[in-house]
Image 1 (spheres, helix red, strand yellow):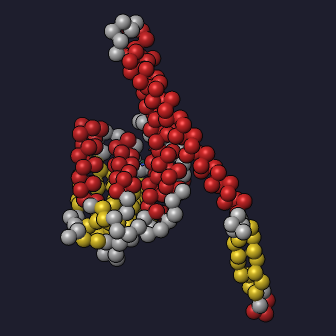
Image 2 (cartoon, protein in one colour; image 1 turned 180 degrees about the vertical axis):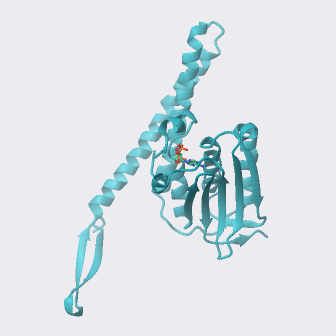
Image 3 (cartoon, helix red, strand yellow; image 1 turned 180 degrees about the horizontal axis):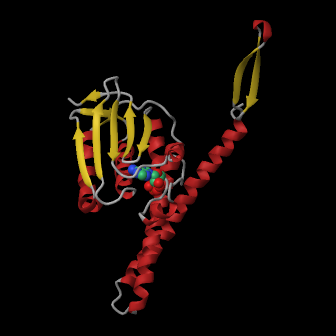
Length: 261
Ligand code: ADP
């Protein structure tokens, strides 16, 4: 029966014999599938009307006959619409990642140093240049196998977080190095105020923020680290978070170390 998925477990009994416990988990799996499909479809459907709304807002904003008092609320509305667009795009990314199987990715070699260079440059050009000091140690030649788009999203999320969630003057140190035991790791370290320990286990949960108001104000969706966790799982890697006042490190380690030809 295609619709039946059984989970079997051998339970030990006294005297060395065993009993087999069998449970039908197909209904739960089906519900989960339906829920994921609903999130993916809803996000997709929301995109088009939002694009139309944003287009009209831009049109009105640029109208020379627009009464001056209407400009600030119009600009605010457009900013909120842009936020919604970002949330929808993160929700779509997350639902795509969740519906993928966790399998080792073979073949597609990603030149992570090149990706890092361009992400660092992009962040230098925008947010960070004035307020944050970025330093990078990138070991050349180290690459991993996987999805370029997803690995780029890890880099962007971790870098953007180090900028968004720390005050002006913070130093950010980015490293891409082999760990010596067959792993290659991206770490993003900042000397910001740190994250209280009780929050650390929850940071990769969807929409979890230490300070929701500040996160929203800085343009966060609350989905960045959930995306990073899923990308790492999909690449058979790991994400570790260490923090104390004055030192926060996010480390994403990939299982294999490969050298570019
Ligand atoms: P957000 O969109 O809010 O950045 P994330 O999932 O990326 O969502 O991060 C979750 C929360 O983790 C953030 O709201 C913030 O409270 C905390 N956080 C992430 N990175 C840092 C950092 N480098 N320093 C301090 N707090 C951080």
